[in-house]
Length: 247
Image (cartoon, rainbow, N blue to C red; front, side, top):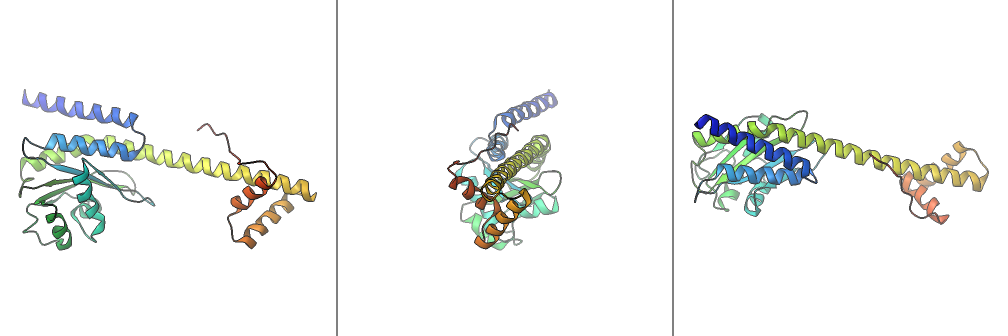
């Protein structure tokens, strides 16, 4: 019966996170819910566990999600100190345990900072993601040795259960970024083409000559080509140019 109960719990968590993934506006919203689910499942009565999630994506600012304000403050310490268990877990892809912050000497600046928040034990577990993206589940407790033994195993099992949902969230975020970049490119291309057409009409020149004039103006003004093009279109009273893109 215990095994069946554990399996049912894992299924309910997975189903909840997949539904949350479909309903979330962005990856950060999903990560915050993931952190809250972790905190609920790993806490005990009168023995709260705070949870954060650190996400590092290529050419993107680090994302720190949390189960609440206290966990968010602790997660931000990961990036305020040069070295931390979360960074070590993410880069080395190994679980990092600080059984007692007061006794651990590996990251003194980090230990001093979290001690100021009355934290005594920390557990950082890496997610197995694809590509250059790194992530780790960060758990904090006011009690020393909170994450020893079976509690650590439960936390690692939670990461395994939720890895697929996080991989999907990261992939959706990548596609969203790609679509946004495509829209920006199309909008930029449209306003440049319109400006070239205006210059052709005004100067009775070829398309290439018009584009060369636009590029020369961009260089002279030390301004982006699409900004100079937008000013040409605006000067003609055409207003703001928008591309209708159904992506």
